[in-house]
Image (cartoon, rainbow, N blue to C red):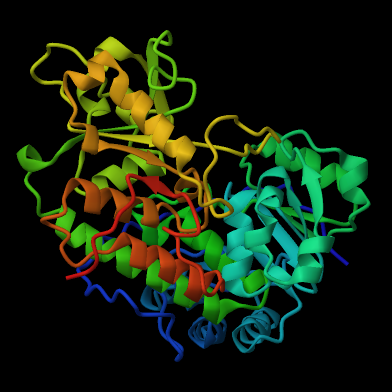
Amino acid sequence: MNNKIIAALAVVIIVAAGCGSAVWYMSQSHQSEKSEVGGTGLEVFGNVDKDNDVDAKDADLLQKYLDTPTEGQAAAVVSLGLDLTYADVNGDGAVNTKDVAAIRAIDNGSYGEIRFLDGNGQVQSISTDISRIGAEYFCNVELCMILGVVDKVVAVDYAPYQLKDFYFQDDSQRDSVMNMANMSSPDYPAVNDMNLDVLLSFSYSVDLLKTKAEKLIGTDVIYLGLYQPNLLSAANSSYVHGILKAGYIFHKVDRAEDYVNWILQKIDYMNGISSSIPENEKPHVIMTNYQNSYFANADTKTLTLYNLNDPQGQACVLAGGHNVLQDIDSKAYQSGYSAKVQVDAVFNDDADIYVNYIFCHTVEYTYSGVKMSGIDHGYCTSDYTDFKNAWTNVNSRELVKAEVDSDHVHIDAGDLRNGASGGVLLAAYLAKAINPDKFTALDPVELHNEYVSEWLGVTGYDVVKDAVITYPTVTVKSS
């Protein structure tokens, strides 16, 4: 049924676009009518007008190009604003009227195959006749819920399997969903027995993706790009593009576009406020881990600090915070995703390096199939004991007590980083904590409950009463 990954690379031109201002609608759900999706540069074959969708406009433009005499086609590319990078829709090596017909099929939903670049820029061509999905980690399972295809998910890896009571509302599916276990080092015979049509990968490792594609027979292995949201340029990020590509893969284009517009609206709202805060008025924040750190164990003299490339560091900027890592090591602030620093590099007598707020990221269930002890949290527990204990531990450290108010220490669930919200929920909680006087209309709890009910489709659920997401909990409601 399915085709394997095509080992080819494509050159992608990323078009930068700024975020405009937007009005905050706390209870707005997805639009019922078809609307234009924000952003540009979607890497789906058929997108020849360089926006973020494939529609009749693309077909019309390509037809105009083909109707132009050969000697005038180069000029037509410019005059029509055409990009032929994704014009060979059927992958036959030529651009002709068959591709126009293929674009029209995509536009009207009658297509059976889609070509696109994955989150690493590799070309894939797959059948859209999909009935058995394997989904790795929280982001991909939540995306399937958002798109309304969670009923086709037959297998998940270790971490979401532990939360199956939340992710699978149908009793029979909850009982039948299979555990792929550690998908960073898969048991390939066991996964092959699950007979998957498609596997949505959490890992972006090219080597691991290649190995999975080779060893999983008849299964399309796809990395959509959800690991890299880029809250500071979200409209053209691999995260947004990944959601839109999934819409085409699963024939859920409208739903994907509605969700992307919802996400972008929230980002635009927060950016409109945080970008107006003068740098010297921004609270100084460290975005860090609780586990394996000085905060969890006073004998450990290091901290991992997240930088501008990680959604946690981006959430700090979007919330109107100043990331202390850029004062400690400006190069580390922009290289990789995080930096390990000595604790005395953070807490010291240097007047230029100081901390107002601490946000500790936690992980309970890992992608490698391990449960981290002593830090229970997430959607399937309402017991705050471990988070309260972690908060107490952080505040008991002598270096913290000397510099940071206890109510400025926050313990946060890894779900905010590793779910399908792309860091938007994390930024909302962060913004309300560090800049409550600026974000007066923002209620992160209400926003999170909207995400759970309107997008994940879980009704009658409250993220404060039924889950452990952040501590101290946020109780301020919208004004």
